[in-house]
Amino acid sequence: MHPPLDRPHPDCQAQISDLHECHATTSKLKFWGCNRVKFLLDECLKAEKKRLLAEMNKDYEAKRAAEDDVFRKAMGKEMSFEEYLQQDKDYQAARKKSGER
Image (cartoon, rainbow, N blue to C red; front, side, top):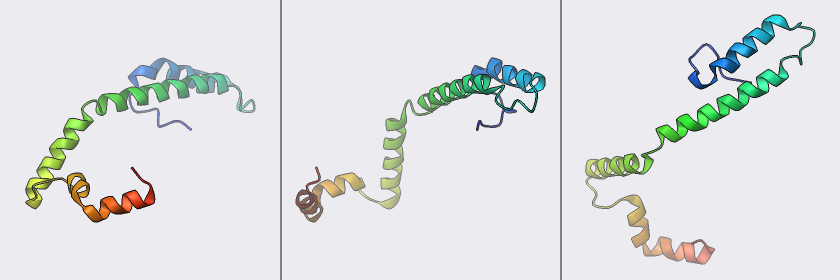
C-alpha cells in the first residue's frame, strides 16, 4: 500500500504518472497488470522517505542537546538524567549485577 499520491512527491512524479496511466489502460479483470509499475513506485517512495528522514535528522544531536539544556534550565537542574544515572551508585550496581554495560 502506498501513501496518498495527491500530495507532492517530487522524486517520484514519473512513477506516479506511469501508475495512473497503467490503471487507466489496463483491464480491471487483470488486477496484476500494474504490479511492476507499482513495485517501481514503492521503491522510489522508499528512497524518497529515506532521503527526507536523513535531511530532517542531519543535526539531531545538536537539537537534542539544546532540548536537554532547555529542560534542565526549566527544571532548575544542573545535570541531565543520563549524567545523574552515571553518578547513581545503586543504579550502577544494579547494572553490573544484571550484566548490562
